[in-house]
Length: 499
Image (cartoon, rainbow, N blue to C red):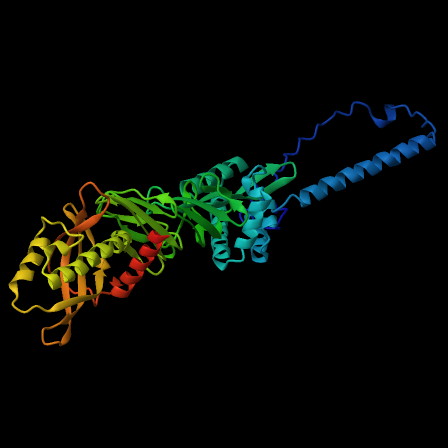
């Protein structure tokens, strides 16, 4: 007895050919011949003359020919259907599937699937696999999985299963217990044994577990966009993906590849965080309102906040009320160029601008008071402050009487601090001092000031001032006001008043 598929000699009790896996047809036992006793001898049987045959009518001949033709056609169709049933052995299926993979023909792969309702038949997903098969890693994974499937099928067949269903059950147990994504499965019908491809669909999603809680992600592969963050029903493959990381202040596109071969779990596309810009900001030390690109930034005073993802350009607006004045500062930075930023500096500029006028008025009036020995000439100074008392003492303590002319005042913007007792800053006054002998020299004085609100007004004044160790002249971030600017300001004010 020989296998009808490959011609290998087989044993009578084999259900499958151990060479090719083809199911064998079992021979039907011959029925014993029935012996009929011949009770009459030929000589005893009367001979009846044969009746003459009637010729077939044309209709009968035609019907006979049609019936014969139909029978031949049916036999031919049955033979064709059996011959075209599909791969009859695991090796034949592996050969065809490998050929489709090598050609990058995902549609042909789908034709060998065992489940007609599988989501893998979807045209979009077949198109995505076609693209993924251009990746050598995807082809390598499929070739390795197919080799394992053939080996498992051969081992199962050689273990003498009793039926096709038992083969299917054993193979299903093997692949399910190992969580494999590709296997071979036999089917039996009147057309014969057919081996099919079983592929478990996979899921893909973006991994944002290491990102802040308020960050969301969406992922897209080709034209297929994730539903609720996860793409389902995909062919196992190595995919190129595009993702969007959505935060409170920015949405950032990223792209990469994901190996999607794990079943019963989401294959996560781990987004490279180094490609997403972060910005670390220090909140103001006071109760201020902070806006980033017109969206509020909330946190405790003085705390560090991580902006992730950060916009390509971050415009901060910081507003507060201090010492009776409403102040607002703005700063625009590029996170790609500056990883950290102290929002106190946003407030320093508007405070320094306002404080500069106060210090300039006090310094200019101080020169006048010294020149005239008249403490009442002091302006913009708290009369109960140590600054006022010290100025009065200096007017009366020197025997020589030089004359002072204020050239300019420089404020170190970075020195500005808002404290409970007032606004602290460092300023340098540049004077021209004319001695009694007529010589003129530069006289620079650096003081640390405390600025507070004048009672019952919105104006500020100098509440305290004492010699400091730092000079504002060489500071990297400074504001200054010169005598010429002050003169222009006074002229403009007089003009407006006259008008």
